[in-house]
Length: 215
Ligand code: ADP
Ligand code: 5GP
Image 1 (cartoon, helix red, strand yellow):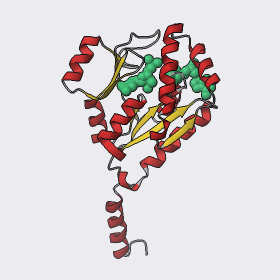
Image 2: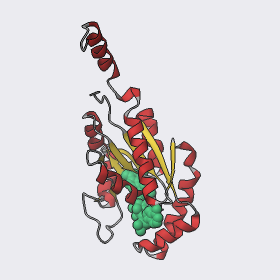
Image 3: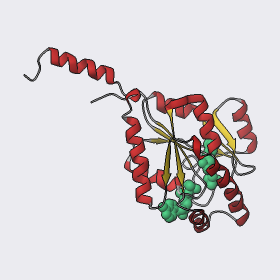
Image 4: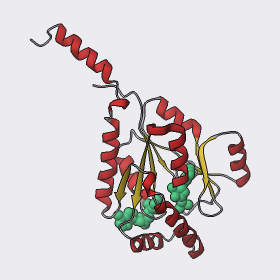
């Protein structure tokens, strides 16, 4: 077995309603060893969302306090007036322990993570097959009032305009295929030489060869 030296920090972005949450949930169901960062947000909880599982729902005052105390790895104003941020400590803790973690954040957050952590972060962008499909998904979800949907479509245009920053582009047309593609990215990144203790394995193999084991 080859040891893992460094966990994969998977940053997943894409327009609201494209299916990021759905794809990530499926990935995590197949890979329970992968952690998910729980963001803080100043928006209210939707029906069915749980504090601490989907988001930490905080007041604008509390969010500002956390900003001032440097508690965020990154934060951004996303849908016009709503703030979202990734708490720094859990990400550091998970990566430090050699585990993988997924961050579902917007393009501004992805850019900030890239600036701070460089190539350690793997940037994945999920797109809809068409603008029409995105509209249908947002409407079908029935979680936002029309003015909230309009804000998300505005953000979606900005999000799509920033696709060039990402290493991987996954079109979420058939859900199963999108999940397989994200899993493929995770597995490939895990096996990158820089994330493995290949030197230790190399040394062991050469020592075994020297000792003539197995002959
Ligand atoms: P996001 O997290 O990107 O805002 P969601 O995961 O909440 O998006 O998905 C938005 C809606 O689109 C949900 O109703 C979800 O079931 C649906 N959806 C996700 N992926 C697909 C797909 N490949 N085809 C059709 N509908 C999808
Ligand atoms: P909502 O859940 O309100 O529909 O949309 C959330 C949007 O904010 C998505 O685009 C998501 O990627 C982004 N987002 C969620 N959490 C964070 C975060 O911690 N930081 C940043 N920068 N964006 C986030």
